[in-house]
Image 1 (tube, rainbow, N blue to C red):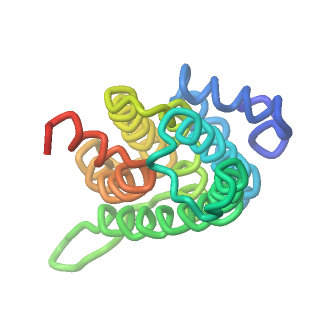
Image 2 (tube, rainbow, N blue to C red):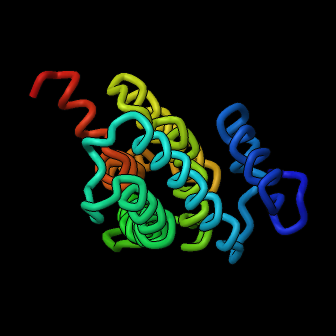
Length: 203
């Protein structure tokens, strides 16, 4: 991730390298692999993660997948997969990134001499990239195993914290405040981590 021109490697091999580096060396990945204005690879990465998640979900929990073509389960699953990667993933990324951007701005507010000001921080593009790459663990969360999904969601939230800290340079408490809303929306709701947690708790 950190060795490529423009911030990160491209193509399937580049996505695989980025995925491994974010999971294994997140501080290095976020510190060296985020480039202002370079959102396209992040979107591709987010789509790849959503594709892996959806395939795992379809393969292990067909009951959780809506039936859109009653006459053919295979065709129905294919339609759901295509909608997930072509529509849900990009929309979900940008919605989560929008929430993250607002959260970062709010967490950056400080009061000095009776007036409000904002601490220096990274831009919107960097926030979008962090949200996308922090979703790396969710590629493994598709199978209908609540414990696995909760674990992946928790690690994704940790990665979001690490990424925000590296990119925006906020203190630990401010970074936690900035990371909670997008993590809850993007990973908790979008990737069904909240539902998995409720299953574990018997709710």
